[in-house]
Amino acid sequence: MKFGMRKPSPKRSFKAMTTGRAKRGVKRAVIPGYGKKGMGWVRNPRKALYNKVYRKTSFGWRDLFK
Image (cartoon, rainbow, N blue to C red; front, side, top):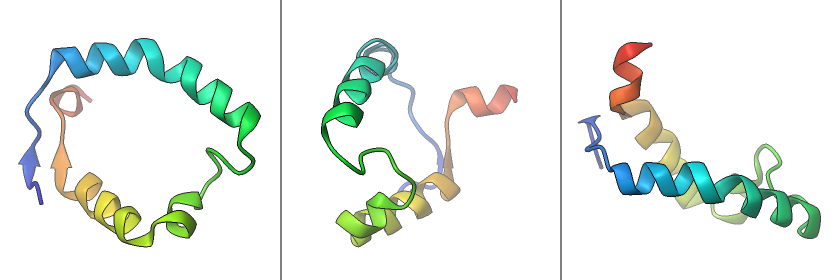
């Protein structure tokens, strides 16, 4: 588990900014329930719990400027 600041990755940041929106739009149109609140807990509760704790215990470099 990561505590503290995450290591920045410019390559991953760019990939997330350019491809994510189109993929999510297609999945939302095809898969019922995709992107709805709470679906992570239904599909994989263990991963959802890990992600919840991870988001509360770590932060990115952009969070420093908020």
